[in-house]
Every structure is written in structure tokens, then in C-alpha cells.
Image 1 (spheres, each protein chain N blue to C red):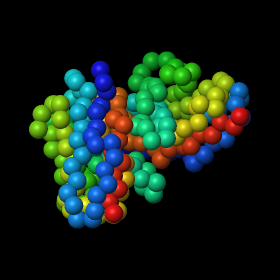
Image 2: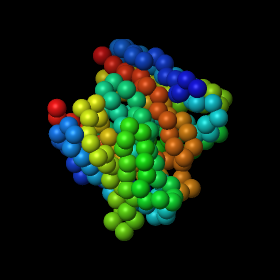
Image 3: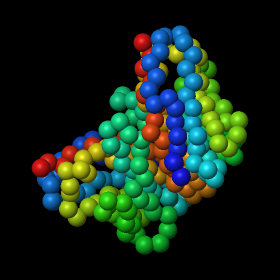
Image 4: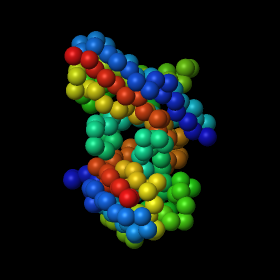
Length: 110
Length: 113
């Protein structure tokens, strides 16, 4: 298995633009998690899905952030409009009792 | 509510010496406990976990961790440190029956040659 796949690996955009991050979980994993990592705040859980259904989105910072999981093999995290404070590394993870992380997307908003 | 504490921001160990990275936790039920490692510009990598059974858990790269229920601790250990062990280490806890894993803030391990 290729593991959790995230794209793009790096994204540089300007403030106000829409950003879409993508994740392909490991096949057979029922749960999918989106995290954000920054130096200041560490690792934060944004939202997680179980069997494609959003279970807890209490970590989503504000309405500019949205996430979808249209099927078991794909999820997106969208930021619209983006702001410089959204600059971070965004990780997707999948798993049941153990979470396996993707390589992350480094987002820079200028 | 679940929580996990890593009391040390940074640990320095000389190569060849034993290392310990500390972790304490709090859960309402029976805990699932994890250690992850993160190398620069990489995602978190699973090292080991405790669910039930033997209190000493062995994982990848020669690491092990000891579950201590009375002290609510799950310290990560290795008998002989390598320079390549230098990385950021996260302890995490999950309450049985919950999908969410709560991560500690991480401990940066420096192995000095």
C-alpha cells in the first residue's frame, strides 16, 4: 500500500484565494482525520470522518474552512478565502485504532 | 476529557546512552496509548502502541515504552541512542470507544555525537 497520499505537497497562494487540499486514505480505513501543524499551536485536529460522515468538526477554525469526503477513497479540505494566518502544514491521517499520517501539504499564504 | 502531557520540550542525550522521553496521560476509561516520531519535513510516523496486555511494548527502530497505570505514564525508552534518533516525538492517547487521538505537544530529542 502506498500509504496516505496528499496533494499538493507544497502550495503558495495569495491572500483571498481559494485553496483545496486533497487526501487519499489507505484503502480499508474507516476513519479519516485532518490536522494542522504550526510552530505556535502544535498539532491541531481540525475535523474527522467515520465511514465518510463528518463526526467532529469542532476544530475547524472558522467558516472559511470546509471539508468533504464524497467517498471512501477521497477527501478535500478547502479554505476560502485564504489568509496569511492559515499558513501551516496540513496533514491527513487515516486508520482505525492507529492513525497513519500522510506526508503533509505545506501551505504558504502571502 | 482525555489529555496527554509531555513535560519536556527538549531532551539531549549523548550517542550510545539510554534515552527516555516522558509522557503522562488522563482518560476516563481504558487508554490506548501511542508514540509517533516526526523527522524534518515529514509526516508523523507510528512507532508503537499499547492497547492491552504486557506493560512493556516494543516498537520500531529499537524503541520501547512502558505502560504504568498507577502513575498514568507511558514513557518512551531506548537502551542506546543513535544520532539518527534525533527528531520530534509525540505521545498520544485515545479513550477506548472514541475515534479521536489526543496528541501531546511533542518533545524534541537531540542525540549528540
